Image 1 (cartoon, rainbow over the protein chains, first blue to last red):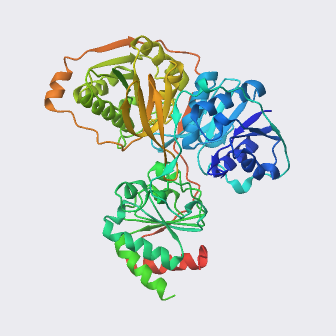
Image 2: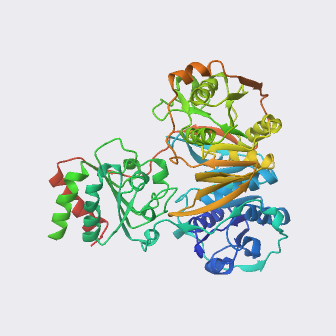
Image 3: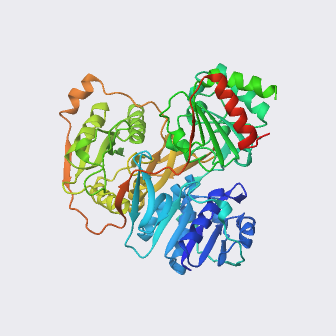
Length: 314
Length: 254
């Protein structure tokens, strides 16, 4: 194989960034194998059977039934050693950021993370808080890459068929140095932001907790869900499951209606895959406007009540 | 107990960022530098442990040219006990594997129980150096801690996962952990701290340029936005009318 895509299990389904990583791998070109690890490996890889890749490799072992960094590192290491892919690819998720550097250190393979696009000279990565881009290259025979959310569009995935096989790993408990407890949510939400068609998203521009209902009212008349940027969640104004960004959800709705969000890079990576971005902000230099389709320069506290009123009359 | 905190000096978020002549990085002479903000949280977490537990030595470690002594001093002024400076006097390296090996060589003999680092740097944003160093030194490693609890010969951390999920992970010592920003409120140095920092030791270890980089920044450039943005700068009523038109006719929300 030329490229190994390491898939991510997101509560029993394939992580969206894993699909995008397959698109990235297809654009790199060559034979592609996708690696699914853990109890949900077969469920995750089912989705892949209609994609144009060479094969799906599944690993099941009780020591990696769910994600733990030491176990995953060992599995990925053994697959790389046996199969010798030239490029190892994954979505740039928190999980990838957790175990991929370990793989890099153990096998001495450079890890070029958070790539936004491919160029003929190398891999393009944002640097200096996304104010500049860098082209990075490597002279090594093997490299590890991770792709930023929305670097590739999952709709561009090429269909086809592929075979699948099990891969036997040799794991023993001594390889797992740290003890990982079961993941948990602090506030249980029944809101699925990642599949929401319309999102009304709140940022610091909402100013105070008393103004939060404005966003919920607007969402209600539009039939949208409410999401938020990190500062709003950190202030305790909305629940953490509504957070969009590198530490929250990765969303790609038909409309992302951004209210008073400045557009820090940590937020933007989680929503720039939206089909339409309509942003309102007082500051005409807010970075959110660089990726917006529609940039409304104005005060949300003045515009939103009027907008709700007009929408009700439609 | 010994804790190392890895701190990097990076261009401040307000700094001008003119490109250098070769367009391979920014022109360092025009840049205002600060302590990498995520590293500031890592340092604070170490200082909080030092306040709670007896006999904790906190050592700030940084790599770079002479200018980085400023952030080492800043760490000392906040309460770290001593500093180590991996001094570069030619080009500044950006290859994480090469950098991690250099740190590992210098830190090996120190036998730190814990290494804390920020989750990523604001300049290159590679987000891996702390883990690489830990792995090279045979330590247990973890990322994105938003809470730490010191236990006997081990540390329990709450890791941040995505979409509002968390996980507790217990790591045996020695451990290298990257710290998520925002888990504490970094202190400012006191005047007494600033005065005291001048007497604290900074050990400099001169680094030779590694000419065999495993990855290399070939050039940097200003991103071009491909998006056509419609700018709507008008009074609130006209803005509302235009927004409704967009929602209705262009995005077809209803």
